[in-house]
Length: 130
Image (cartoon, rainbow, N blue to C red; front, top):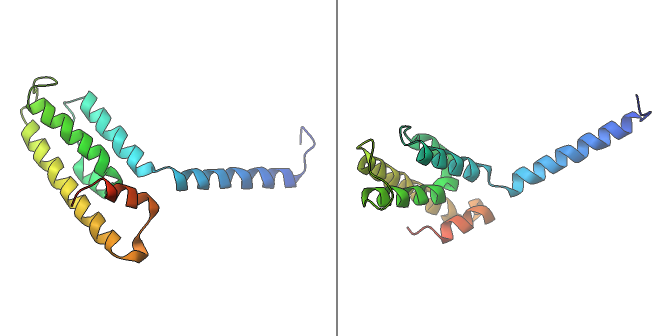
């Protein structure tokens, strides 16, 4: 009203914004980003437990961040990074290994059927051994 624009301008602007949002969400792996952020926060604050059930619910997008987290836990156990404050690092490592194994199995089963194959998860499967 102030700039004397008609309703077509508002409709076109909303369509452009909605299209941009849909393209962004189609290209960016939001679940992988969420898993990476959750695990980096858990590593920064060791008194907080990692919610592996939530990461499992995020699906195969959380395989790569979980593998990095496993490596960090293994280095922590080996004494390469910092001493263990909670005493349950070995338990966390075993739970993370189990979760990664479960997610990899689900991914291989999903990608075995050609109708459920996607470009995004083909890249994940390429770098995750069975």
